[in-house]
Image (cartoon, rainbow, N blue to C red; front, side):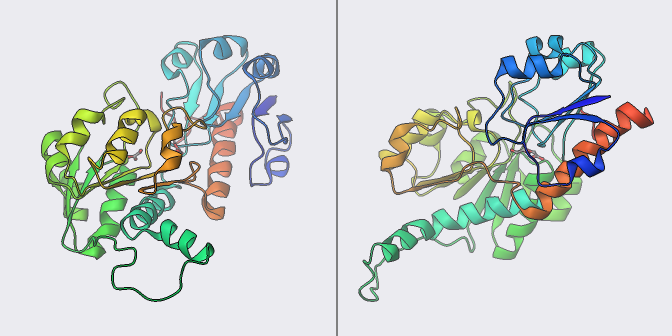
Length: 316
Ligand code: GLV
Ligand code: GLV
């Protein structure tokens, strides 16, 4: 049986998947759609990245395909419905990356609120010539209100971690979650109140029809002028040129972004601003977690192809 793996993973793939024929892209470049179509034409399994768009044409090309394991928790890059119609199991990698991604959200939040990156540049450029009472003043989390948009496992874990900062936590998501409220002390609110009352807003939602462009200039105008926005979910949840305008015109105070609307392309104006911290989509990027995600993808493939079981993390 043949498995296509679209990028090199930090895991002993060849050893773990011995017995399978592997078509393993160990180069550091993405496969083109055409290359992928050729490769999966005789494949039984596919391990792909969030940067691979698995649309109908790719799924149709995989005539023997039985399982797609996405090396990510989000799976908006895959036409899951169509895969399901074709009897293909689609899997993702939740749970193993929850803490890692939540930690990054907090790191990004503090980077913006305490101007960590600006400070680093300042020192690097040799500008630190003396302590000053008004040098690089940031803003505290302590006793402020944090609004979490999307309160799945990652959102809840961000809430649990932030409890230690003694903040008030609001959340907005499709369904009120009493258990999560007990765990985090968070309070459910409608979207408008989340925008109006939060000092910090963290987006931890998946991308779907209801979250796409949820944050536009209208929402930024409802937010506090002192508010900081962090996005560790998916780029298209935020209308990026509107965010640029809001940051430039100081409609909100700052932003921390791990994801972008058209990544890896970034709205160019953002590079000119010093009230934004940008990361190259590294939410789950710890050594431990990326390895665990790889093992999980392999296990999903083995479950479907060898054990004929439903894998624990199938999304269809
Ligand atoms: C990362 O963005 C993921 O969905 O795992
Ligand atoms: C995913 O983005 C989650 O909220 O768990």
